[in-house]
Image 1 (cartoon, rainbow, N blue to C red):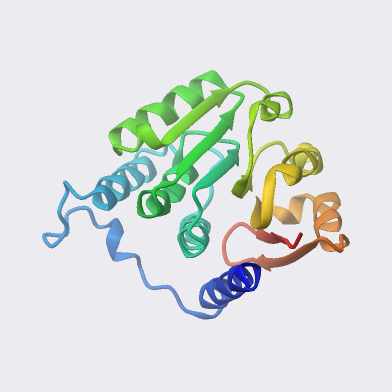
Image 2: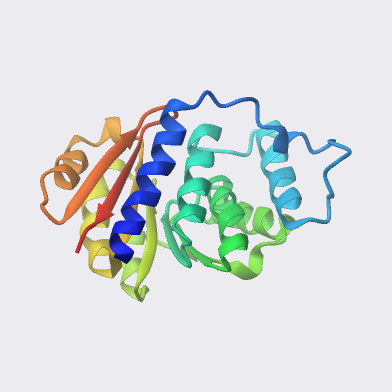
Length: 218
């Protein structure tokens, strides 16, 4: 029953994303007089906006995919989220928009020290540093430190490593959990892996940079 509810939540979420015409997101207007800058959501959105204006979104997701990450994380009530490829923290902050609602946590991996340091600063500015753990180093090795169950795993790192990340993360993802991957048009071997396994169900959201949404069925 729980698994069926998870499937329904994901499908409803993706239908909304794929078929609605998104308006300019009003939450990105940090000068909106109706917004309370002390509210957790407003603080996160203000940092996201500042990152875009200062061009500190190196190799990160576009806004449409950020919104998808938030929607899927919040709709599934995710508590334990893992991200491969922190960069400067932009996608992580989108995840945190949901996690501050679900009382969840984010563990995110970044191989580059400078980008990891910038991400920590952004998480602190947004007031979410207590819900985020940034792990530096090669994620192919560092993921061995993870403990399950993982509710959502998001992969957005070295494209040649996607299948390896999938194989390492899958045993830790709970049945009914999601594996998300960005820029899927660049990783045909990964697409094949998630669309030919009987244990997985995958759909694609292509409004942004190309996001695959894979359900671990069992």
